[in-house]
Each structure stands twice: as structure tokens, then as C-alpha cells.
Length: 326
Image (tube, rainbow, N blue to C red):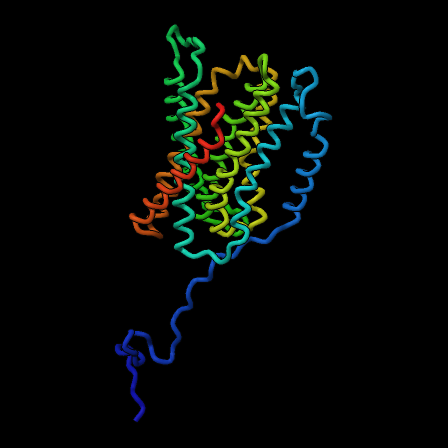
């Protein structure tokens, strides 16, 4: 007695509704990290060469007057420190959805802490009496304007990436590519304001000491920011080696902007509070509408909130420890 099959009934099925004799669909493969290539190796060699040849003969300026080489080197070292934030993730294993959710929540807390710090820094700047169209333009107005422009930039960038579905970055496409692209773009632009701060700090009567202190402080700030970048890139398949390099890349504007600001400080001071607001607005948008939204999908709202608040508090405490003498 073989069982007759008909188009209507199909093959016999088990209690789970799976056709007998047929295997269930295999689970999706875990995200594979992209391999390290010659470009990454060459990048490391170039960075090592710059670190060696850009170093001034003495880190303490002769006569207390810093040079362009001092400004660039201090900004360069501050940028390199960003890669230290990615190092803890090198020792982690396979990425799961829960780990991805936790990564997004931790990165969100760190970015919220950094954003509020940037806003406060912009509001605390000394009044410079700037006037535009016959009206006083306070730092509060400039921070608010920069904040709105920062959010607008991220929204426009997001729409541009979504309209170009053919874009690829290694094996990344679609949603993962968008997250990585936005994170790298936002954190890189955020570094513009920090480079401006380094350049301005080296000017003035006590510029040599103040500039060195500000650069060291920013180097410490860059470590958790590098971790925030790594928490978004590495779980989405970017290789560990490339993640460290991309973390450093996001801080490259610091030495590149610090030099022209140092040389022409009076032309850049007006835009410092605008840049701080811009960075804060773009980071808060990515945090709320990208990182937290994804974290809630992989975790519960409760655990997303707990993790984000803990990360926010840790970032705030770290900054308090770094800046006791300011």
C-alpha cells in the first residue's frame, strides 16, 4: 500500500507542517568579516611613516612658541588614539543578534553623552561680539543653527544612500551599508570641530601648554568615540583590522583642520560653536533614529534603555575624570 499523492494533498507532512523526507531550510549564515587586504596594510605603513617623519625635534616648543609641525603632530597623535577604542572588540567572537543589539545600545549611550558635551562646550564659549545683518549672533544661536544643519545633513545623506542601491562596501550592501556609511560620515564630520579646537588652543600667549593639554584631552575623548564606531562596524561584518583603521579615519580631520586654523585663527573662531552644534545634531539623529531603533528590534525596550543609560553614564563619568583641571 503506497500512499497516493495528489496535487491537492502533496507529500505527507509531520506535526510541524514540514514535508516528510525534506529537510528544513538552513539557518542564515553568520555575518562573515571581510578579509584584510593590501590596502589596509599599505595604510598602516603610510600612517607609521607619517608618525615618524612628522614628529618635531622637540615636543616642547623652543621659546614656548608652537610651530605648524607641533600643531599637526599633536592633532595626529590625538587622531591615532581613536583606534585604541576598537581594540577591545578584537578579542570577541561570533556576532549574534543580541550582541548586535547591545552594541547599538552602548554606542547610542556614548554618542548621546558626547553630543550633550559638545552642546555644552559650544554654549560655554566666551562671547565674541559677532554680528550678522546688523544683529548680534550669540553662541546659543550658532549652536542651534549648527544643530539643525547637522540633522539636515544626516537626513539628506541617508536619502542619498538609500537612492543608490548599487552601492557596495566590500560585502556590505543595503541596510548594513547605510549604517556603516552614516556612522563613519557623522563621526568624521564631528572631528572637524575638534580639529578646530586644537588649532585655536595653540594660539595665544600660553598656546604651547594649552594646546598640548587640549590635544591630550581630545586623545582621551577619542578612545570611547573609536569604540562607538567599532560597535557599529564590526558586528556588521567589517574586519577587525579594517574597523581599527576606520575608527582612526573618523578622527583624521583633527590634524588636517588644526593646521589652517592655527595659521588663520581669527577667520575660524566664529564657526567653532556652529561646528559643535552641527556635530551634536548629526550624532543625536543617528543615535535616536538608527542605533536605538535597531537596538530595540534585537533587545527589549527595557534592556535597550538600561544599556543606553549605563553607557551614557559611563561616558559622562569618563569625561569628568579627564577634565578635572579645565
